[in-house]
Image (cartoon, rainbow, N blue to C red; front, side, top):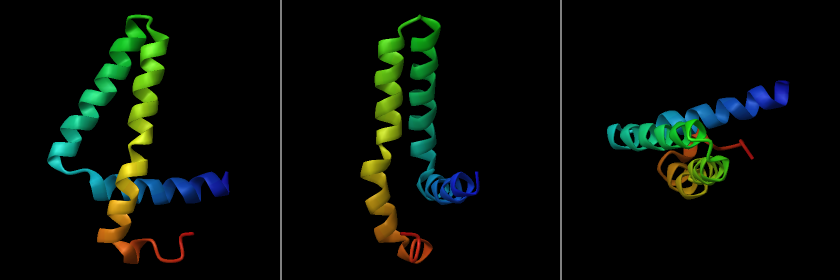
Length: 76
């Protein structure tokens, strides 16, 4: 549990650093699409959208590390 909490703290930091007004609208749309797919019983679509949503961090993290490197030093 300690390890999960530590990693979650790092991800919370990334989420706060990336949550611009535009990104908030995009995240809300992504979450809405996931819920809509689940409500429609389309688990394949829900999984696809969830993987895309979670996978976005692969594009975002390098940009955030570049812009805010001091937050990440020693976090390897």
